Image 1: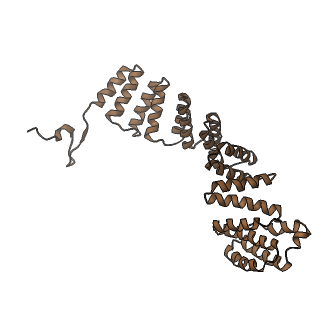
Image 2 (image 1 turned 45 degrees about the vertical axis):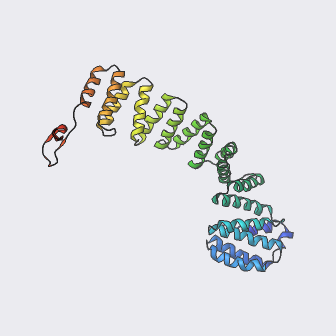
Image 3 (image 1 turned 135 degrees about the vertical axis):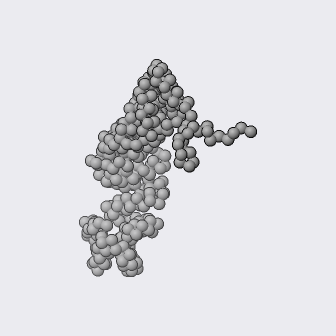
Length: 324
């Protein structure tokens, strides 16, 4: 809560300042101190009494303005929205207070999931302000995104990103989602690069960039992104296999075969007949016939395990029952 609401009234000129009784002004100032201290319940209790004591339209509008901020502090969103609208009904409310209530209503309506109303209030705030706060441009973009108006969201996000030196990652991610929705893949790639410059070890974004490249059939780029994701952190089995298949796709089956062998031995891929057959196929594609034969021979060996009583290792076929 900022200590500027009453100052706005004083700066608005003698006509408005005279519409607030000095005693009433003093009681509002006490309410403001409580709200600054986070004691919203005490503020609400005092504002209920002040609501019946207000004599001028401006006094009533000021009480509603304070109530809007107090209810917001208590996360009573419906009450905050109602109080803000009541304050805005006063036609002579100073412009700065009116603009601040537009901003409050935009924020509240987003929290209530009412994105169409949020977009309207935030648009009023942005149109009435020469230098709007970048975070409210982001909120306006989010409302437009939820309404499926992606190009409007993109315009607001670009302005927000330009106005803030070190914007949160969430702003880039929303811009990325808008570009993907509008199939602007080249612009989406630029956003991915911005994110990865900020966080080069973020595996998830390397993986998502790889998917973007795959959608465009840019297999070399997808492979490079997945390999960087692998070096940055742990990948699930399916994406390790995707690296293997991409190496084969771009004409480097020997590298693919060596990776299968490595990950099989490290336990990152299952050391079973299916994986060995994949490795053998890759060796054959690389014309490494001897390597393929060795792996195939290993894949046909019967599995061995310990007996139930912990005895010596024996062939798995020995445990089969005799034929009748």
